[in-house]
Image 1 (cartoon, helix red, strand yellow):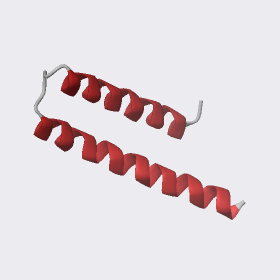
Image 2 (cartoon, helix red, strand yellow; image 1 turned 30 degrees about the vertical axis):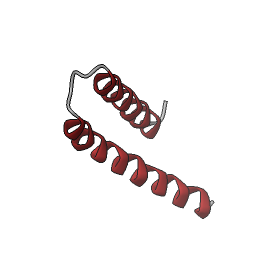
Image 3 (spheres, helix red, strand yellow; image 1 turned 90 degrees about the horizontal axis):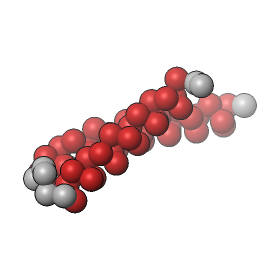
Image 4 (tube, one colour; image 1 turned 30 degrees about the horizontal axis):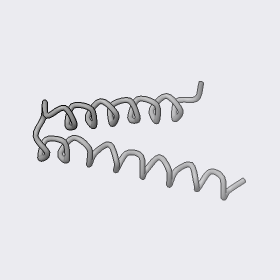
Length: 57
């Protein structure tokens, strides 16, 4: 399994966990946003990197 696939899977798992914790009321909305923004930025950078790889080939 490529490294980017593992990273995307890990980020997705953490995002789902954060969403579940927020929906159950375990964490506050501000903590959810603080935790979710870095995950979203990481997915954006991975997406841009993958798009560049596809466009090069």
